[in-house]
Structures are given as C-alpha cells and as structure tokens.
Length: 409
Image 1 (cartoon, helix red, strand yellow):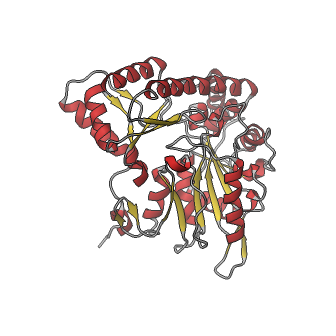
Image 2 (cartoon, rainbow, N blue to C red):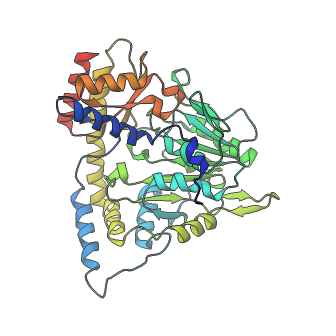
Image 3 (cartoon, rainbow, N blue to C red):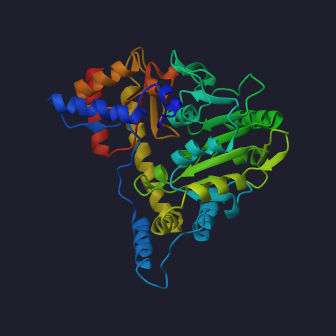
C-alpha cells in the first residue's frame, strides 16, 4: 500500500498564491467585472532588457554549433556566470565573497525551501511573522513542526514583527535556536534591517552555534544613497554563520527564465551530533549535484548579460520604474483613514495595516474594484489585519488600481 507523507496533511491550506488564483478564477467565472488588475503576486511585467535578450540569443546560437554546444554543466554553475555574479553582487561591498562561494540555481524560492534538507530533523527553528510562506511550509513538509493551531505551527519559534518594532523583530530570547530565517528587504512588509540589528543576529548565531539563512532577493531595491546593508556578509563574522540567497527574478525580470544563486563562504560551519565542525558548502554542493542538473546554458548566458555593464544599467532603469509604482501606491493609501502604510521605500512591496480582516478586505477589493492584493494572513498570524500590494505592474494599471481602490475605501 502506498501511503502519503503525513506532514503534508498538516499544511493549513493550499499555497497562498494558488489559493488567491483559485478565488480569482471563481470570481471571474461568476461575476461581471472590470479588467482584473493584479497587484498581488510579485510577478514582473516589463520585458527583458536588450542586453539580456542579446546574450540569451547568443546562448541559443551556441547550442546550434558543434564547437560551442553544451551538455551537462558544472553543478555549481558556469565559471563565467559565477565570476560575473561575484563582481556585480559583491564587488562594491566590503565583503570577502568570490566566485568559489557562489552556487548557481534556478531560483531563491527553491534554494530556501530545499536548504533545510542539510540539517537534522530535531533542530529548533525561528521564523519571523509575517513571512514568506515557503520558509514555514518547507519545514512543515519536512516534519519539523507539530499541528497547525490558532494561526501557527507548534514546534516553531515565531519572531513577531509588527508596527511597534517597525517590522524588525529582535533575535530570539531562547538560547537554543539552531536555524533562523531572515529576509531583508522584507517580503512582505518592505522593512529593511540596519547594521545594528543584523549584528545582533550574527552575534546570536556565533554565540549559540546557530545558522542564519538570509534571503536577499530584493537587496537591489534599496535606494542607492542609503547606507543600509545589502548583504548579511557586511556584518563581521557573518561568513562563519550565514548563508545568503540572491535572485535575478525581481532584479532582472527572470521570473520566467529562472536564475539565482546561493552564497556560502568556506568559513561557514555546522556541527555533527558530537559537536564536530562540518564545512557547510560541500554539503550543499553534494545535495545539488544529486538532485539538480543545473540552470540551462542559454539562461546562464542571459544572466551574464544582465551583469554586464550595459545590462546592469538597463536593469537599474527597470528597478526605478517599479519603485516609482511603489511611490504612487504609498501616496494613494497614505491619506486614507484607518490604513497605515509601510514599506515601498527600499522594497517593491507596500504593507498596509487595517482594522479589517485581511481575507475579507481581499474579497471586497476583488469584487468592488477588480484589483487583486495579497491578504496579510497568508504570511502569518501578524498579518491578519493587513494586505500586501505589489509594485510589479505597468504604470497605467497601477494608477488605475489606486484610483479604483481609493474611491471605495
């Protein structure tokens, strides 16, 4: 008899964005409505820039010749891309990261979800609330939690992020946490940690032999003039106790192409059951070489084009475009009574606290304005009275959506 993994039955519901799509489809099938404007899921809308397209075409042309054809690639990614990533992602930062620390993948979501496979089943885990749901659900599927009750899973330590702490939770008070998930600039709240807060997390990890998983997928949305840290590795000691995830999905519009990287320094260690030090990087490379055949060669060439001088310049224009959208959304909601606006300054997400139930407000906006937002409850208990709005859309649609919503609220 084939039996199910019972951990999947603990999951509170379908994946958040799948559930949103289901409700949209149900609405459009039964209601007369205006054009649906999607400001929920953070999917880019601008086309790939010319430098990326040129590099992608060249990669495809290479596959058509015997001289340049590529089969299986290196498990950690082609050297030409890892060098480009190291230079562009870390070259301007006071950090010790090079191409040997970079492992190319097809998305930060996959890496963040899969990385927990490297650790023992009984580790203690701290996760912020609200938070990107993959951090929680990957550990539920792996069997590291109890049942779902009152909006949270038993067995996890939740780091409360809320208006009172500017959505920047301090390190856990418990001394036995082994794994801590962090995301800055934050999805969903748009908050960004400063050096002082990240230093506290690094010091906690070093003192208690814990590991930080730092999702930096939106680091390039931090304003250029800001002194806020763009990498956990800017903090002294972080190379020993942190892993960083970076992605081209929102940086360069690769949500449909898929390319990212996980960054692990040679100094990073975890421990055996006998407290013996174990280098972390070889474990991730071993996992990837067994379960993943790498990102397609043309995609890696396209990513190299994104990191070129001209490609990077083009990308900055797209980031500025989306951040202007965020500014428009912030300005539309800020005057409204009973709605408190956060984020949207160093991140492409705007977090709006309300007195309303988040799913009820989602439904109201969908039915009355045909605008899709993300209910905050999908990110955790602390999002029960909030919505997240994405700046990823065309300017005309963002402006139209704001007009529709503000007329109703």
